[in-house]
Image (cartoon, helix red, strand yellow):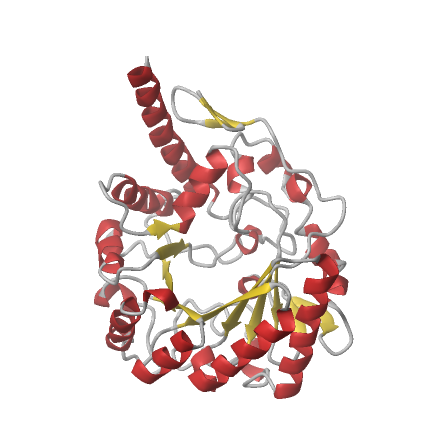
Length: 400
């Protein structure tokens, strides 16, 4: 049975028959991540900004200055008009962005919308939720800013990693924030959850559903071949099985209670669509970071690989976003299938996994490797493909 460009055989294993070639010219940026505050009031033990390979954020300016922000707005406007973009997605990020205060974030949103005209600027704040009290939520929601919150499940699962420097858990504050946010659905962007093998997958999913999120995004912990992820007794597929259990709970529900971005993206790719996220598929990277000092950076999760991995040596003061597109490291991440390791190109599901999240491929100075989660991804892709195949066979039989 054919699922778009992927043939699903009797055992549910996919075989890709089409690839995305490198673009003839750079694909313009459509997502701009602004590090408006580099510090954080939490000390999460898996934080790629402060706890993994590159900890240079500790010496970055604490907050983005008005001059850096004004230059950034101007550069976004240039890029939008040069490429005729209809939409520009802007994420106000950190550290913890609410450390600058909700009124400041609301004013930033207004200025970004003005700068991005005639494109529509969609503004999101990604927060740990601990400072999202009632007044802050009202200010942001009234300003048309959407809010994404990080939470790893119930109290035990969340507070295992997402703690204050004192060791105190953050669950109570985030729980209150999410209950408030559920009452302002127009401002609710969704929940980010990092997979933890110590937590039960179905219990974690149910805990997140209690907050009525419009979208849940499950993230694998940032790891690579030099710093492998935690596993039980060397189990190479534990993360894949964890996610497969959540997939079944989501897919089998009689009524859809939320979107799950990872699963929707897998289904889209298995049915022949183009990827809409850089963690799967072969679509060119289209996100760029502006640091508090005005430096352009590659996607900030690359900090998990080695010191300096995000650096471009370009700044909003001297360079345009088009110049960032021509940076060799950015060009490499827009190279489609040719950027994959030889072993990945030979894999029958490479068009779906896309080699996995780029930071997870790092080994000894090179990203031309399979993901450190390769076997987990293969298990999950085969599982989802198998579920789709069974349902499509059933539908065909019913039609006959």
